[in-house]
Amino acid sequence: MKGKNAIKVALFLIALILAGSLLSKYHASNEGRQVGDWPEALREWQEANPGKEVVVWAEGDLDGDGAEDLVIIYRQHKKCFTRVLIRKGNDYRLLRDMPAPVENQQIQFRDIDNKPPVELIISGTKGSEVGYAIYRIEEEGLIDLFAENMDNCC
Ligand SMILES: [Ca+2]
Image (cartoon, rainbow, N blue to C red):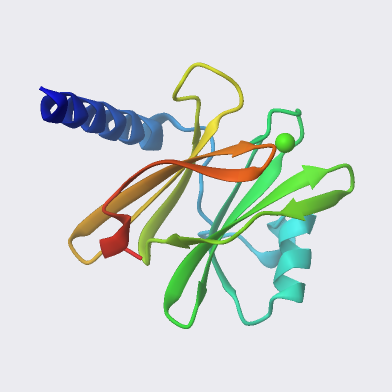
């Protein structure tokens, strides 16, 4: 019975993610964007981290304070990582890096539990493997809520 419920929850989350990728107003891609279009925080981060290649990025309010925060998926030595920058006034607080899928990465902001702030969903692939992880920002930092098959995608 427990297993069935877990499958139902997983299917529900996958459906949410698929709907999210179709409906999300945050288009998490840097395709066609020039460096000049990047938010200032992203340009500063890239200048400070020249060895890290920005793959995709997105802005969204992850801590519910009304200010846009920044999520970057970057590549370094063939591995990918997610880096979250929480805006604090004119500055940013950097949260710990997390492994990210190496291909087809997507960043989404979804209110999964009907309770602010929104959750952060990182999804992507590696070959035929598909994985995703859901996080929430709390006082103490980035909380891992749920992950599926990320080990095989990162
Ligand atoms: Ca914020």
